[in-house]
Image (cartoon, rainbow, N blue to C red):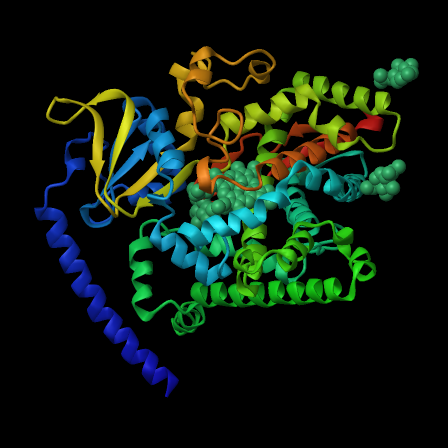
Amino acid sequence: MATNLIGTLIQAGGIYALTWVVWRLSRRYTMKSPLDNIPGPRPTSMIFGNLKDMDDSVTMWKLQEDLMTKWNGVVKLKGFLNENMLYVFDPVAAYNVLLRDHYVYESPHFARSWSKILFGDGVFAVTGSQHKAQRKMMNPLFSIAQLRSITPTFQNVAKKLCAAITTQVQSRRTDSGEIDVLDWLSRAALELIGQGGLGYSFDQLVEDKPNELGDAIKNIAPSLSGGLLSYGDVISTLDVFGDSSSFKLRLLDSIPFKQVKQLVSCIRTIHDGCQNIYEEKKAALMAGEDATVHQVGEGKDIMSVLLKANLEAVEQDRLSENEVIGQMCSLVFAASDTTSSALARTLHILAQHQDIQDKLREEILKASNNSGAENLSYDEIVDLPYLDAICRETLRLYPPVGLIFKETNEDTILPFSKPIVGIDGSLISEIPVPKGTKVFVGITASNRTPELWGEDALEWKPERWLSTLPRQVLDAKIPGVYANLLTFSGGGRACIGFKFSQLEMKVILSTLIESFRFKPSKNHSEIYWNATRIVTPSIGPGNSPTMPMEVTLIKDD
Ligand code: HEM
Ligand SMILES: *[C@@H]1O[C@H](CO)[C@@H](O)[C@H](O)[C@H]1NC(C)=O
Ligand SMILES: *[C@@H]1O[C@H](CO)[C@@H](O)[C@H](O)[C@H]1NC(C)=O
Ligand SMILES: *[C@@H]1O[C@H](CO)[C@@H](O)[C@H](O)[C@H]1NC(C)=O
Ligand SMILES: *[C@@H]1O[C@H](CO)[C@@H](O)[C@H](O)[C@H]1NC(C)=O
């Protein structure tokens, strides 16, 4: 019965999809668009335009370089079936997309449908007033007071990480060994958001692997990547079957591909896992203070605070159970791979600059010595100037997420800071952008613009943060929430966790650099950074994520 129904639906869906394709095609090739006059690179595929290049790491780096150097901050790209899209990094254009008109430039339809299937009604899936309401409930969870209170939790995870790495290094007979630093960093990142965000331990950082829920979360990104952009539009046509995620999940499950089956099984594990954590938290909260403080994170984690605030909120501000569980899944997903990517990149660069690594170590040792306490306080950690400069400079030059992807939900006008030359030779200083246009904001490109950051924009120089930034940077009104950079985006959909993430990075880095010396791997001194989604290191194109390094204990240095 059920399979019959699904079969009929798939047929109906097929006919619908075909009609849709023919209609879109005829419209795209015949209708004039205001974007036709915007210059841009030649598409590499008739069907997928420039999208295939963006889905492939090797071509993506080339395309990105091309977009940054050959064009002027506003570029046209071709999408699925000759669709016109925009790629912008001009500061005024970025300001309009991310800040001024951020409810016009929404997260794209297909990304929201996917998020809803993956994580339910969390921030990634909702728009408009529902999104605004969720952010309002969640913003206080990322306050400085909240960060102060979870600092010891982070330090505890950092100490476990050190112990684990020490054990692995010492098992190499000599006190220096090559280890996969990425593996440890991603386990630590998951544990940090687990303990600090959910009040839940995924991974004690001692045994071989994280638990089933941790594994499922780690597997989501790899099973999604490849073709996500290219097939995005096709995926969002699933929406004709209605809004029910459980139905879409059943539909996906009926597709006889191993990769899809794996994905569905991961999604189920994540839903059940988050639901269970939610039930436990709620029960503890109902049972009162005593029960809460005995949990992981002692009730100081983000979710415990959210549940409490939610119970106390007035009716119309309150999040539904579905929304709260949606937030849990969304946060873990948003926090883990981004953080481990940023940490891996920082250690990789420090390994290549031993002098800077030494100077940083000196700063940390001096602070520990001056503090006298066993652990540095929140203020002592965030105030370390050299560590701060190193984090900023790494996140400037090497943002873990290189692109922000938006889609207009109504017609609008996009102005730029300086006119560009159209294909017909005319000067254009603003363009009408039709409803439904996909717009990419180039994070990497904005962070590296030589006109803003200077001739040395492509060099990694932490010192640039120790004096005043160039006038042009300060005057450009770059819409980023962090350090005049777009690394954590900006506006109403900026990264909610950027301060949380800074604290994570600083706690982990200060603890690791105090205890170990990091050097490039002897066997794999070249590290390849895969840019298909969140930038990830490996030993070469086509290899799975890993970052071997030579690690030495400092006390025996
Ligand atoms: C170095 C680490 C991180 C980087 C580079 C990063 C970057 C970003 C970026 C670029 C966005 C905007 C995405 C878009 O609009 O397409 C974003 C959104 C978001 N990030 Fe982060 N992030 C990091 C860490 C974290 C952490 C640790 C958390 C949670 C504790 C977090 C939670 C979120 C959430 C919930 C959103 C969605 C906000 C919304 O749609 O309203 N992120 N992040
Ligand atoms: C320092 O941190 C460790 C691990 O996080 C903790 O066990 C210890 O109690 C802390 N020490 C002080 C004095 O707070
Ligand atoms: C490095 O390569 C050499 C020779 O190929 C090998 O013997 C050695 O085990 C490798 N070291 C590590 C840590 O992988
Ligand atoms: C730590 O402090 C003591 C006295 O306050 C000083 O003698 C020592 O040199 C300091 N060590 C470092 C590494 O700064
Ligand atoms: C980049 O990562 C994706 C997803 O893990 C993988 O499918 C692809 O082969 C990788 N590309 C390169 C060049 O390593």
